Image (cartoon, rainbow, N blue to C red; front, top):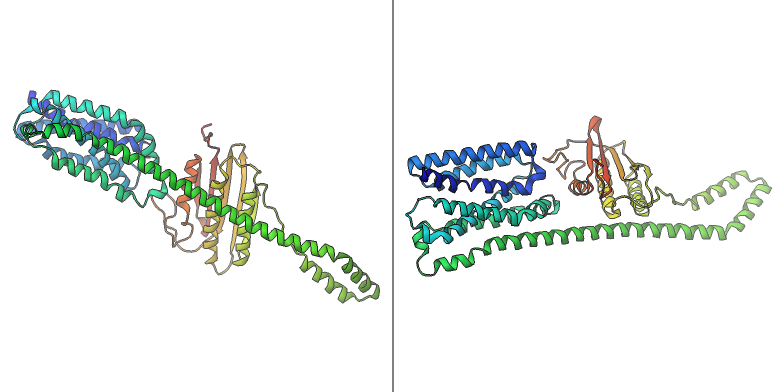
Length: 441
């Protein structure tokens, strides 16, 4: 019975490993949290009891059971979590590395009291100490895993480097397994135990530094992207300002010559030269044809609309604007303009491929004091492929470019995205809420 308890306590490390692996992905679960908790608990307890019984009856080393058990658990984990495979792999090995550290450190702490041969499970007190260490690790890393790491999983700009980040916990797991002593007595030789007790705590500290470095790099990248968006908006506003200044100069010149034009018109009218009079009037109209249209009260959004209007004229695309936005938006101006620009870029790319019927319909308005709605509609040709996030994913097809950035902005403001592709019309609707508001409010 005592041996069965020893095996059970040793295999019980599956429980804290499961907790650590689920903490960063609580916002990405496919099922209700309570259901997943009960389901995971049932599987973990079943594996612990079955493993303890099998190991006791066969005398098998617990490692031979726990490795296939971890593979089975990872399969279940992938089924329950809605994330890219590489991100799930990172979270899983991150939890495994922290638990292996606890087991590794327990062996060094309890080596003088173990003194048994290879393959013998830890003493019950050692097993309880190991579980206690994992509880401390969970408490210490709880906020980091549930906030910082969870937030990093949502950062679109990190998607291309997760495969490299995943290597770190994987390498740590391999190194711990390589250095893991197979016999407690071997630790007591020389100063191995003393060195291990001093150096082993560097492993969780290394993970702490690792998380902070990734977090800081991510924040810096976000700030750089925000700065880039603001610079892009300023450039567009500068183009609009230069165009307006040109129109104003042209208008000033027309006003200066207005008296002369009136004299010419008077003479042509008095002389009855109707055709020359009409021709002269049309020349004046063409010369004074100014583009000074305002699309909405917000100057940044107005500049974006003017910019894409000029592009629409260049590519022979008819753009219909219905913008009713106030001077001050409930969301950050640079975020909305980046989202707005991405959707307009997608729409123009899509309709430029059409032989005819090139148009884009755009509407934006305040649905309440704290809720902003934007809708872009355009015809398209070809097949649209969708990714796991239900957004178009192929850059070679219509509607896919920049949508990852759009999705990130929508998540930032607790918003929603609705996409329709009926009758070869691509329509995307976005709702954004003020940062301190949500649909539940």
